[in-house]
Length: 240
Ligand SMILES: [Zn+2]
Image (cartoon, rainbow, N blue to C red):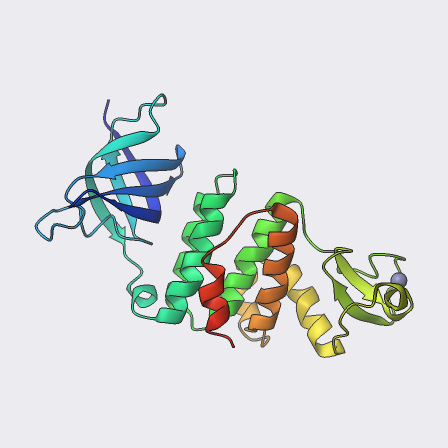
């Protein structure tokens, strides 16, 4: 049985002299580990379709009893060349792919859409933030941004509490003592948490391309999902 499936390469580990094991997120089977023979050989016809972030079609016999499938051939569908030539986009795409690999849910469509947006837009952190908001929603760990998470009031909001999971009013924050943000930033955080790629054309006009928003969303993801993300440090380093 030859299975031909579309997928995005989210990880690769070089193996022996010329080979590699690449992890592909596929629509049909979720995460699949593929053994790629001749990964490092320039003469291998598969080399251009199995690099990190490549969106390709992969031919293999899927064996559910095996943890690694043998790749027969791969064909590049889109290579996201604007990502691969921009170190900041590479750092963001690495985080995006590591998250996709770290959660149980199959987010193939969301991942593909996110990499497309990242490839075509310069608002790197807006793209990443919309992706993170979708991930938090899928995992059921979105912060509460419609009022104070502790008492419910909608006025005098002054803080975003990671521990409490949302906005805090000035009265409740006397107890929790979380960092105080200005109103403009609190509004941006709220809009971001309501955002989706369906309204992306509107979002790019709202000045939401802010790493500070990314950092808060990442903190929520890491705190509540327990996912360990080694790629995030590189992105952080670019923003210090
Ligand atoms: Zn309150």
